[in-house]
Image (cartoon, rainbow, N blue to C red; front, side, top):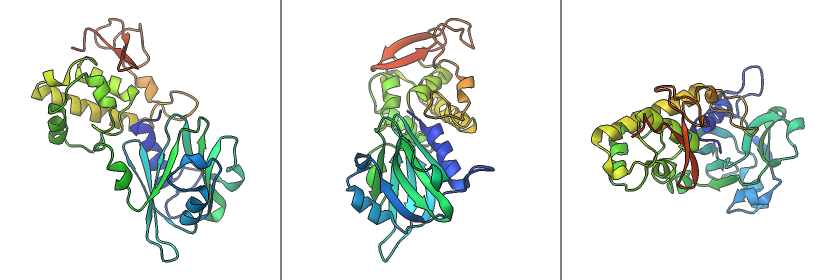
Length: 276
């Protein structure tokens, strides 16, 4: 599943366009929308969704956690709307020429002015599109964005928690945006064992973990995310993994083999010497 750095990379591309390729989504007008897989639309019929987004201009593209947030301007006297997209396991969102819009796995297509289209490919059909009056109707259900939360707030939220660190970092109601890859990498950088109980952390541990999460996420964004399978090509953060997916390989710090265990039903990678 794409995590915060991959989703932020997509948001940046939608805001700025691709050099020598598709233009920015911001400023484009939706001429028509087609929900090719109606179940991808949450809470609305395909027809209602298509009608509500028609003739709206894309005002901005943002992100909260793993949600893309596309703000749509007013149209025909109707107020602005927020369109949120969660890519889930296999979603991809691209601006393409209209003659490239209807692919085998295209689930929702927005035809734009100028001969362009926004295409949501989703081979596994787990992705979701939300259309609401205010993005907070969706993002309010989850925790603060993992990249924006301050050290003090993070430490205070963590101080009130119990249980193992790895499942806690994956809990989107605690902080939003961290998934399996970046949780493993953050815990390694902070020197904390994935099974370490949150209630045993010192103030210094909490601040170190906050700094590690931030550093790892920013490094992931700088590398355009990680290309971990066919779903998300183009990133290269996988070249910088220190523990994730490196079972049996030498730890970059101590040289001992990286271990793989299951924590909270998730594959977890760590160094038993460097993480306590």
